[in-house]
Amino acid sequence: MKKVFTTVLFALPLTLLAQTASIRVNTERIIGEIDPKIYGVFMEPIGRDTVFPITNNLYGPLYDPASPLANEDGFKTNYIDAMRELKITNMRWPGGNYIASYDWRDGIGPKADRPVRKDLAWGGYETNHVGTDEWIKLNKAIGSENVICLNLGLGDVNNARFWIEYTNISSGTYYSDLRIKYGNTEPYKVKYWCIGNEVDGQPWINGYKNAEDYCKIGLEAAKALKNVDNSIQLIANGSSYYEPTGVWVDWNRQVVNAFTGVADYLSIHRYWGEKISTDYYNFMGEAAMDFEEKITTAAAQIRIAQSLYPEKTPLKLSVDEWAARGSDIKGVLANAMCLNSFVRHADIVKMANFTMMTSLLATDKDKGTYKSPLFYAYKLFSNNCHGKTVDAYVACETFDAGRFSDIPYLDVTSVYSEATGTVYINVINRHQDKGIKTEIEDVKGAFTGKAAVSLIYGELGDNFSYDKQDKYTPKTEEISLKNNKLTYTFPAHSFTQIAVKVK
Image 1 (tube, rainbow, N blue to C red):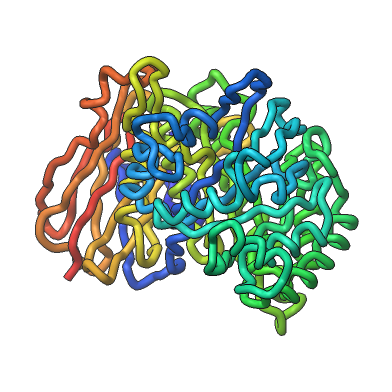
Image 2: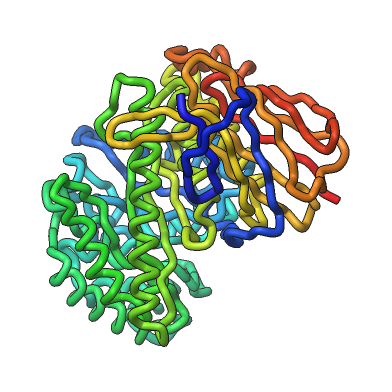
């Protein structure tokens, strides 16, 4: 086995004699300010149901006016309460691939008058009972901001600008007055708008465009949308189709260069291990490095554009669709590593949206929803990891997986909260069957008091179940400093968050 010495950003080979790993936190080496918008969710109706009543992952699980759990707007309070507990900051809606054939005008006005449409993305029927006003009410109930995705697939710029007129103009125009007619007097003032979704996804998206064509229509859309409301922020489409020829890299380059100074964010999408590997280390290692690669490649392109156009405001990165599959601890660790990536790149990743909102609660079709370890892992990040990402130097053994080598077993980020005077150290032990004893210190010896440890652990292959939910809360303990250091053994395939005060 090799030993490595890593910072939050890099992994560098280093031969060490000691078997004990080490983490050295430096609160004075700031990577970036963590934007609360990285704790967002994404939601779209996905389903193939053509038999009424229509059910999919929106209609039924989340929206069901007949449910005893429904609020006055028809949304289930178990999900609303869970999102409030997670302190979700924003929700991106209504798609997704769904948006490419969606007309927002179908989803306003009396529900009885709304047309049923064939959803070209997923194949089911769309009743349009959840439309603009309903989505916005859901966000209000959660306490989150709206991120609306516009149809630049089969849709056009005029359709998009009328939508902003409906949501953001006070009164006096056709669509703003229509909103008032339907009972919503005050404008919604939606700030964040995605200029299309996955337009590069030729095999699946309706209304595919190459980079040149997307830039043409996207820039015209940006111009028109800003003419309706100059206060909005725009999110341009980065890559989502990672075919092996590497065309996605050039797609990002063209979009970044075209939209620097025009849009505010570049979006990228990545789902962990899209081709699920049965090999543990490929899933935990190769997929992790692949996820990092998609972020660092886009970040590098943004920085190149910053050098090319120094007079223009650089783009920020929005990973507005992301998730890892899995119904046991392995999937939880993968999702925790995604969150670690956003924290690690806090200087450039300023928004992220987990797919799907409803997946943050686990579901037993006969017994109901429950909080799995995924919920608690997300909560440890979203409730605690605010403030500044700071350097964490790590020395530990490494492994090779797929096309990547020297992957550290310990995936580590460190967050300093000035508000509470606390450092939060997030550690995923990727080793399949070995715990890793680790010494943890601040480079200036600033740790003080006892450290609070929260551990999420489970047996590989042990799928989560409703009946075991009482076992899923994080295991907690306190550990004491010795010679200004903490010593802790991270269990195999586990996620641990350590909170410690600094002087």
